[in-house]
Length: 165
Image 1: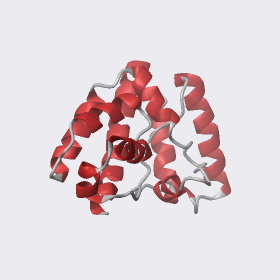
Image 2: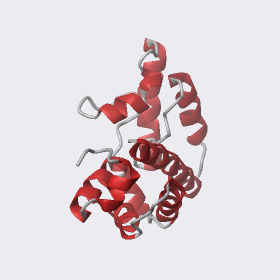
Image 3: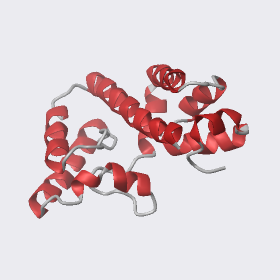
């Protein structure tokens, strides 16, 4: 089965195949299990609602597991074309912005103990850098909720890609 089987293919896939596809969307085993358990969907909005509901129910440990599956902003993984595509806004960043992103990522990780997660699709490096600096002012509980919302947006975009296939 292709990694982007379309909704029909996803609904009919074996559990193992569906788990593989969902793992390309999100690394959280709790999210994968919740979305898998609600199959078949039949229509995209049901899939998206299931994903949103699963994300809302993730614990901080589950969120951390999801975050661990993402590349650092400004350093897309070479072996992950999805990461490079989503972070295309950093490709043309100048040296100064790239250095500021690296420094901001370190500051974020020092403050919150995890990598900075943002839905990077359609955003420039300067926009992501501004959001990173803004979010450094959040308290830890608020930042978890912002991170949860960013993960929801990322998963939605990735699921839309699955559905379009």
